[in-house]
Amino acid sequence: MIFPPENFEQLRLFIVKVNQGDVDFSIGRKSLRALQIMISEPEIVAVNNIVELATVIQLSPASLTRLAKLLGFNGFNQLQKIFKEKSKKANHFYSDNLKKLLAESSTSISSIINKQHDDMINNLQRSISHINEQSWQKATNLLAQKHRIFIFGYRQSSAIASILRYGLALIRPNVQMLVQADHGVAIALGQLRKGDLLVLLGSAPYSNVTIKIASLAKKQHCQILSITDTKLSPLNDFADVALYIPTVSSFYANSMVENCFFIESLLSLTAIELGGSALNNLQQHEQLLADLAVST
Image (cartoon, rainbow, N blue to C red):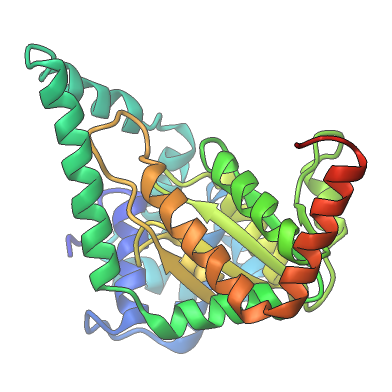
């Protein structure tokens, strides 16, 4: 760990490791809780002075100063600076990946495709070997048993969210996307009730929209299932259950192949959990398709 952290992501990853017990760091319970709030809602740190922030996170200004120095900063202003820089800094995830791909442009078409294939196979094999069956069973139980389920994915993850929603709605009722085309995020969040299940999908570079939705849904006492890329994902800060699907490949954006594979596996496991009710729902769906003359 570099002290003080050079940027927001270094600070976030450090706190994740502290919570997981991977590093020994002497910090009081109230200070750790305050720091977790700051990490989950970085904008409140960026825009408030030390007195205003102290009120929001319920920690005295003096304790905030001590916390900053504990992390290696000269004082609160230096700590706040990395939160301010986070909101200004552009993310180069996609362009950096494309630069790597362009560096290989002299190779043959088959070699490029074979490299993508090898990345996919390696990711799948590594993920399968590290599956946490307890987490997958919990996720399956939630998807089968929760009365109402909402699903959300932003940017590229919205495509996987749609696949999950379609497959799940075939085998059980009360499944919908959190944000419909004609509704905003605020209206959608207002529909959530205590005990609902919110499934969030997201990988690096993590969307601030998804993280904010996770934070607000948690405050509304929803259960959260995160489907993300690593144990260090910020979505895990709010999740009751987390599943990890890698997205790193030679592609210039996140690879969706592994997501599709594991989402199909998750849906199959949920159908098995539901048993006869899943079969009844599918048969009703097939009858509706026949009545509508949609399929032959």
